[in-house]
Length: 503
Image (cartoon, rainbow, N blue to C red):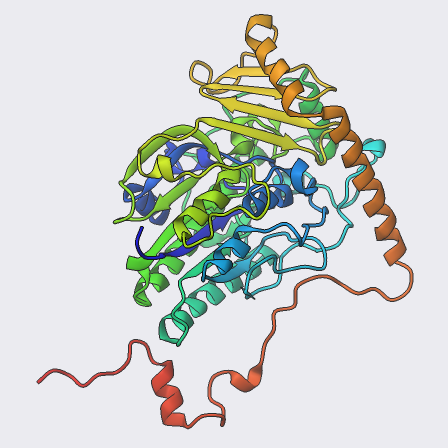
């Protein structure tokens, strides 16, 4: 790859791969993502490594599993001394830009990004720290089933407010890049908060689906699954029974939100093309985790079932990689080494340990790994939950539950637990014992929760200083000002530059 290409990463929140036509869904309408998939590389078995917002994003930016960084849950601080892919790319000469959600917790709200164009939709403090020692008490910040029971159309939500700002700032910055003097390659992350619950969307998107084509969940609830019982408790499902009509309404609104994400992907891609940057830009479509959407009687994420942890990964790079599909199991932890390989020029030399492996062999169709490791250390469990996906098999272990083993080739709905066969499950149990110190990780998570909960309470006394990102804004340099002659300013702002018509 002789020239450093621009990189545009389009990230959705809670978008299951199973909700996209590129992955076989026959209900959702996503023509813009479909077009990127048709002319790009689709990873059929891409996974998040920790199915919750902040831990998954921590894996994405650091190329390490949560146990290696301490980003265990949605209120765990992102360590500043651990390099992110933004640090590596910036070191290699890239202009690094973030707009939208990344759920950075703690005082560092940049983590290698040179520019951050919006605040985050979620808080940056420790208030969402789970407490495994008091699992029976439901904090007021947990998911509630209002997202499902009150699903339907709306005129406005805070998520719509946020995503419209995210897309607007992304479009503006692309044009700023095109008409500005800074000719460095860029890496821009545009991170939307849809289709995250609550399941509500404007009439325009609600009406794209009649409701009659919305399928009911395929897999029924398993009342004997211990992990599902805990998740039902965490989200308050047992306190709010759901009717079949509410299930269909929530799924219809989710599909509307997916179409909303797709339209915004289209807007950003249109700006990229209008700015004449598309030919030099690799575009990636990803998500932080999926959404159960009523399958198995479960909602949201927080599990290693396919709907919750399998995510889209589409790489659109005509001229760089062949189009087609990759069947190997890979994950978000692999994106940091992939991005540094794409950047080249010294970015690939790791300054810290990484757990991921580059996807360039997959993209160039020269081989590559077929293996995913996962960790879940947040609300919904009371001990570490770890996962191995290798080939067609997925093994899930947590000390408090029976193990689960699924053959996804023969059983894509994960209905038949094979972990009771010692010959099949024994090697996975041995590997987990070698790979993870589960008791030690359990102690580390409890200690982290205890520290953060104490700091949270201490900071409530006296004057509080928020960590939330405040985007800088210098009005003296915006639009028409007297710092530069008007004709020069207007000429600089016009794109493309005016040239006299041909005779």
